[in-house]
Image 1 (spheres, rainbow, N blue to C red):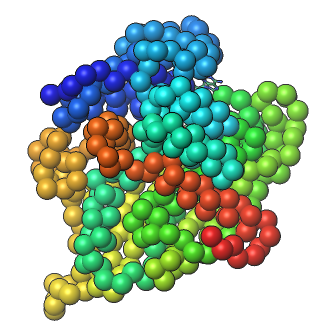
Image 2 (image 1 turned 30 degrees about the vertical axis):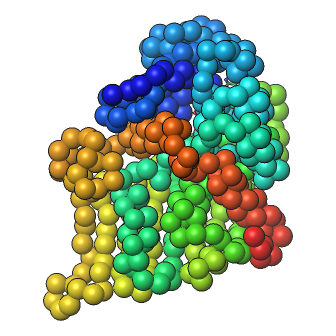
Length: 378
Ligand SMILES: NC(=O)c1ccc[n+]([C@@H]2O[C@H](COP(=O)([O-])OP(=O)(O)OC[C@H]3O[C@@H](n4cnc5c(N)ncnc54)[C@H](O)[C@@H]3O)[C@@H](O)[C@H]2O)c1
């Protein structure tokens, strides 16, 4: 039974604004939350479009300036679903106004920006979270639980990749609505902060810290028209990144991300190889986890495919019945349910801004190594 209200102020009504709005609406129907999320205000720059979004999702009011939203007395939680260049300024202002803050990933464009955000939320003592939602896909949470249980034994390898193919044409502009990810000013980096950051957050969570790394990055299309200026400008983002890393636990990591893998739209895969077994997961078959247990003797030893839909699997007891699958959007529902639940305890839901700063640090090291070719120590 939900307790007192938690008034949400949502900034941005794009892809993530929709995912998060859906999560706040759905979470209390399936999870027992100590506070009831109320869609209080939606914020966007265009009044008409913001009102249309508010009407569709059930927001009570709209704002066209995020500063107004952050100042409002009736907002408890500010949710930042806007391009990366706005995360720091909004998060710092929200923390100073005493609001709980959720921001989409990556935390920030750079470590320096992220450090300011961590300092602000910690000084204000407000609840904070970066929405690295893949942690809360049930099969990925199960990977974390299996590794933590020690069943894999010593970990030797962690490998992950995130592949897309939507920027191959040189006609795709940089900057502006929809293509801000190609503008280094707005995004901070290319595939590293956008896609690889997901793989890195999961990796750091499951396999611990990265001690050192070296990276190869490439910008395949060197100039693109800027959607806002109409001029051809140099492209400052990384189109692809390949990373070799040493984890603090002695295991080796390999990571790859690109928007130039023809045929792949959003392929996130990860695999962990340990002394006694291996685990592998694929976003396109997100309800399954592949498992190899070397300790099974004889002819039946082999890879098995676990359908992660039973009540004993993470989060699944709150959904349907065994055998029925869930989707991408559920990871956001789990994220918001965990965050709201943790707000009432002294154990924050992760990753907090401080935890997510590690991912940004690794991203910065990848970009630096991609330029210098050198190994970076973290
Ligand atoms: N967790 C995930 O899987 C995931 C997926 C996609 C994007 N993201 C992250 O979410 C964030 C938003 O990405 P998106 O895909 O939703 O982008 P989007 O382009 O779909 O939406 C961005 C929104 O921000 C609004 N906006 C821009 N400037 C604004 C301002 N000054 N004031 C108010 N609103 C403003 C735009 O109008 C738009 O509604 C980014 O940080 C991105 O990295 C995370």
